[in-house]
Length: 433
Image (tube, rainbow, N blue to C red):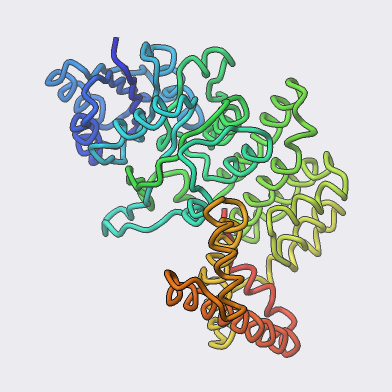
């Protein structure tokens, strides 16, 4: 029996499948079985899979007769049902991975006794090969430990990561014990409830803060490349997750992050919704928000650091004010005002966020306790001689950041006074998953 089962899911990706399978075959963790599940491709994908598998006994073709409705759920579940290894991972058939990916994920999970391991990834633009960080890249700065116990607050933090399954390694016993599978429907985005089921059910997770896989984006035919009503399918999974939590008596503990997840999806999908479909989007959102009290809505907005636009959209939906909803969407375009652009880049350059994370780290670690005491002495002009220059520099940076923050707040206040939509434009550009 292999140590890790890797499930590769494919559909009509003849131009990419061989690169993907070659990157899986090159894994430095040799003790693997690879189930290549094709969801009824109509191009040459299945034939290429069979040819590749014939050359490597670790690879097994699983060819479904016809394409299943919706997204990846059916082929992914077919792979899970056939997996035999203690650990399971996924790879999208049009992506490719680093040779050390599964060795590093496996080592982290086993060493730390975790149920899950998760690495970082980058997006790769189809056609150009440009690589860029995903929207949740900044969240890695909050992770400094080799393993995290998934209590309720920590689970909330990991639920905010993008829900993709192909950067994680899963203890198969966890999946079987909790009967975790991808929910099958005629829609898409099944990875979102799967992510929730796993994070909420797992005891611990081992983060691997390295880019170990490359996710192809902007490919023709990709769900995320669309800008039509198919994007609305993601909201159907709110009820899937809501019912799952309620059935386990966990809804009170997770309703705020669940609504926060809905608000985040509303933000990015509403940007891509053409005017003709805005009523349809609004009508989908109304019954979701109706399940939450005004206090819960406010908590979800506050705890997820949502800006002015998200507040207005959420309140418009909760009060069933379609006119306000449309007006908010119509006044969110980017500004050509260079001062607004400059203010945005200053606000979201990461400097303030980095300073906040550093301060949090200093307050919450023993090492930080010592450094904090050094900084206190530095402020009193009696620094320890061994770290005088470094500590003095830290104090100067801290003071300059505070000064920059004050000046930026003043700039934004003046801009808002001149143009009431300025703050909204800044918040619009600052959206993060």
